[in-house]
Image 1 (tube, one colour):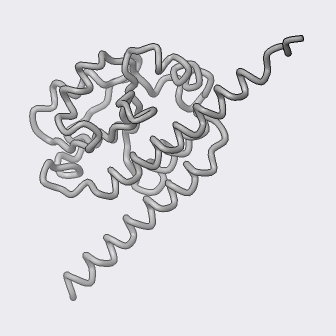
Image 2 (cartoon, rainbow, N blue to C red):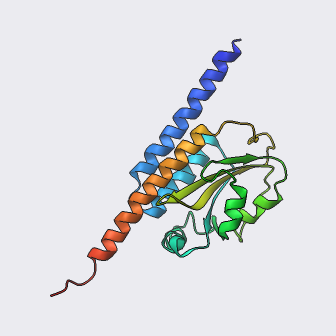
Image 3 (cartoon, rainbow, N blue to C red):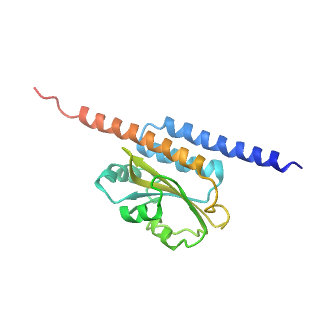
Length: 185
């Protein structure tokens, strides 16, 4: 059969999967809902066995941590890590990293209550107000699922979309918190 045609169909299917996830992320009305849509979408569209979040240990992530703790789906699927650890694993800033060798440093991203059998990993960073605050991590026991030389354009695009939605939802949450206080008079 036609290999280029097979490759094109596969690429189209992957692109549609990312578009579906982006649509659900855009529809989220809360921070927990955003990450539930992201993780659920990655699992459903791509059958990724291990998906979790890592947030930097910083006051900026405190509202996100609270939102994740409030979600049954997410409360055991995130870790809080030092900023320098995440920055060290992401040498190109907000560009995703794929790896299937020398994974030991990536194991520090695992949630404390869960350990995964990961032989390849994709780490997709996200930002709040343009500053790195975390990553969503896709892990697989297949060592060839994520390889360093694979393209990450679609992954980077979705990560940027997640960052934009996070900015929107954080601003909404901040406005609502300010509006809910007593009126001065």
